[in-house]
Length: 221
Image (tube, rainbow, N blue to C red; front, side):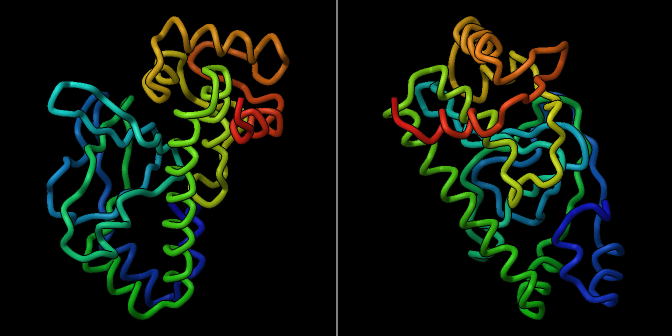
């Protein structure tokens, strides 16, 4: 818990209130953390596991906006905007443990702590850049590069600090996140492995050349 970088922004009194108000929630694989349309009441931090932000169209088409691994926080935007309903579902991709900060405590910190305020602004800015990159990838990148972008995106230090190079994510989960079929995402992963950028292990993907993955994800093909 104390590894979350934003805690370093807080005074001793603020830390005391945060520790008093935080609750821990365990969620099982496929369980909803929160749903689209709900009034936001909490800011969520992933202590362990993997969460996806997802939407499903009226016709049943699904889109995944982002994956939040251990160390990441999500759900700040609707809390900043006030009582704006959530715009996506958050679903556990595996059994996960979450830290939950109440809306009242989050907004209290925003009002009185300028460093925390800056942290949240940077968080929202990085998230916006991520979404713009996703739109570009859908238009310009081939499937291998889209998979590379998803993997590289897990190492955004602002959004997901302290990630190990041994990424705890399965090939099946990569398929969900890219919107590709399992077969196609597996082919892309094998190509990245052949090129020496990653190593595929059981239940995890070891990142060998992060710079190469970032370059593939940033350059149109």
